[in-house]
Length: 451
Image (tube, rainbow, N blue to C red; front, side, top):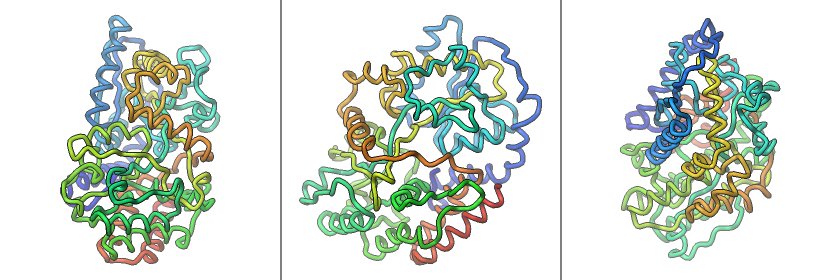
C-alpha cells in the first residue's frame, strides 16, 4: 500500500509490484487452484515463514524463529523477509508457482482476496483440536480473521491509526494540539507550524487510502461500501481530503513531490518525520500506527532526537472514525505440505511468553491478554506510550473496523489510482474537485473490472 512518484526508489518498487499484480492476475488465479490446493499435510520438520518489515522487525523475527527451533528439537524454520511492496509481488509469484511459504504474514486489506482465490487454509480444525489455542484472545480480535464463517487468520497484534508528532518542534513553537481535531483544524495547525518553524506537513502522501478511509468513517461513510464492485462514497464525500493537498501545496506548508524523490517510502529511517536536516524537507507529523512509535523514536535518535508523541488522526467524529486494527495476521498457505507444524508455529507465536517478549509491540499489542500482562514491565517507554494510547484513547473512542477490502482495492490503494491522483494535485496539475471526480470514477472502474 505504498506508492510514490515514478522514478524514485520506492516508486520503482511499487511499480514493479503493481505490474506483476496486473500482468499476473490470471496466473495468480491459476496458482490458487490445481493439485497444490489438495496437498496433504506431509508432516515433516521444516517450514518456511514469510513476512514484511524493516530491519528491526527482521532481527526480532530471526530471534523468534531460532527460539522456535530451540523449543522444538529437529525443527527447521526458513525465514523470508521482504519490504512491503516486494512482499506482495513475491507472494503472487510463489502462488503462481505453487510454492507459497507455509506460514505467511497477511494484511487485513488483502485477506478477502487471498481467501477468494482459495490460497489460505481454514484454521478451524486446528482450533478445535487445540493445536491453536484462542481462549486468551478477545472475540472481536479473533473475528477480524474470519470470513464466511471460517477462521482463516490469527491476528499477530493489535494497533490503531495514530499521528506521530514531533512534539519538540510544537513545544518550541508554542503550539498545542487539540485532543481531537477535524481536518480543517488540522490544516490550521499545519499552517501555524510552517509559519513558526519552517517545518512542513505530509498528509500521508504515498501511503494508500487508510487516511481517506478514516476521514470518511468520521462522516459515517464506508469507502468500499458493500464490497459489491463500487465505492460507497461520491466525489463530494472525498473532495475535502484532496483539498488538504491542494491548499497545502498552494500555501507552501505541504511537502512537494520533489522531497520524496530520493527517499525509500517503506523505510522508517527515511520518513520525513525523522529524516533530513532542512525543516523545509521535514514533516512535523507522520500518519502511521500507534505501535510504530518505538521504531520512529529510535530512528529519530540519530537526527536531533525529538520527542515523538501520539495523537488520533483528524476526523469530523473521531469516535466514529477510530478503530482497533489487526497489526498483521498469520495464515497458513493452502498449498503447504506441513500444515500441522505451521499451525504449531502460529500457536507458539501467539501464546508463548518467549516470542511475545522478543517481538514486544512490533506488530501491535499481543492479542493474548495474558501475554500482554507478562510483557508490560519489559516494555520500552515508547511501547508503554503506545499501550496507553490504545487502551485509554483509542478503545473508548472507536467503532468496528470496516470489512476487508474487495478485489481490486490494492490498485485503488496504490499508484494506479490514489497515488497518481495525489501526485497530480501536489504538482498543481489538477484541482481537489477534479481529483475527487477522477478518484471515484477510476476506483469504480477498477473495482468493477476486478469483480
